[in-house]
Image 1 (tube, rainbow, N blue to C red):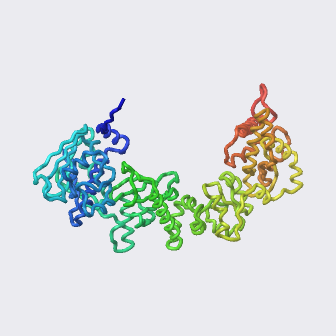
Image 2: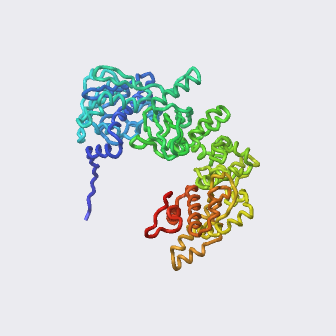
Length: 620
């Protein structure tokens, strides 16, 4: 049996398509005005390709209905059928039709829109759209009216010549009641300025009273200025208007090969590296997005950019940048501009560099880790937390040829007072990037030595106690070692400053790992306990260093009663734990509670635990 074959065309449900656009492609109904301005600007570009002297104006009128009139190329009746009634077909992507001409091919690269769906955005706010157009290329061609409806119907009719005296196009729409806010005079003026503030054609908004508002202007980076100071003031004023802050400095962005111009503004306050920057990107004058974090490298989170480009591609919604090789190359080039500005400050404006680093040192540290040239320039300027206070590495290394760096903030805080008193130079390496950068100090300062802090280094710089004094304290020390040893910690007696510190807990990552292993092993049985036990590698345990110069410790060393001595040892260990500022394990929290209760009980009942009828001391 022979089977017949017939061809059919897809049917488009326009209402369903409009719903898809409004809920999934466009972020807000407000984009309808952007699409109208964009089409008007492209029509003017097309006309000026053939007639450079043609007028270039876009007029938006508000009232019960909204109209957008341009002095562009206009449409013939054939163009209307081809482009307005065919979804997805754009005159800017085809060389056919009434818009084609001698200069159109070169102008096509200047068009903003490329997808042929812009007019549909108007159906998001209106059920009917009217387009009246007169072509510029054929003076004898009639004026054409196209009237489209959201249900997919449209009509076309020819109007008298005086219906539109000059070439161009007028789009009229009457909003639905639920979208009237988007066509109010105030909202339209704000949207026109937001989207079209940098368009080349003159854009004006006329309200129902006839008041005319000029929307766009030449951006300050494209104007001529009388002096560098005048240019800086103009750029700063634009930043205050656009972003709402006064920048620490401005960085000119000019990439002729990529058709990009603009400016980067350095934020005057610190921001989190996790906060994605909101850069403003204009495509041929039309705002594409004010949230384009992909424009600059992640490390450049301390600047906000506004640029106008001709080469970057938009997504179909024209609300974001399309990720491709061009965008990647532009991102790298802009990153180099920001980096060059930063490295140039050391020679041109050290005071500004100092203010910048004070504000954005985290961003500079992130970049310097991977940029050797920048590292050499900025590392001497970067502040670090040290035993000499917050100082630069250059200043710190002058006083300490051997620089010790901790692995964590907690480790630094527990040794800093003692290390400072002992003359040791210690840098807090616990903050993001700091330890890596400190270890690179010898690259820019030959002769400096950097090494990770080892607890044994601190212990070696503490003074040994007189042998006779240690002998008198032997009984307490033995009991303390027995008590604290259950927590994988040794006890030693030393003389050190400051006198106010009764004890110091010297710990390191290996010792903490060993305690964790031991704790897991004691809580396990069978094969798992044997495996954990076999992992013990003889790592040195933490050390509780008692300060023999401290009055509290001297008093504790004289205790002979076993119960009180045990409680005192636990209390000294607990205090050292708290001073280390590291998280406490459950057993350590229990030790602190036990020591506190024991000392309180001894204070209330010095003869021992209270029994029936025992009275508390009157001075308790």
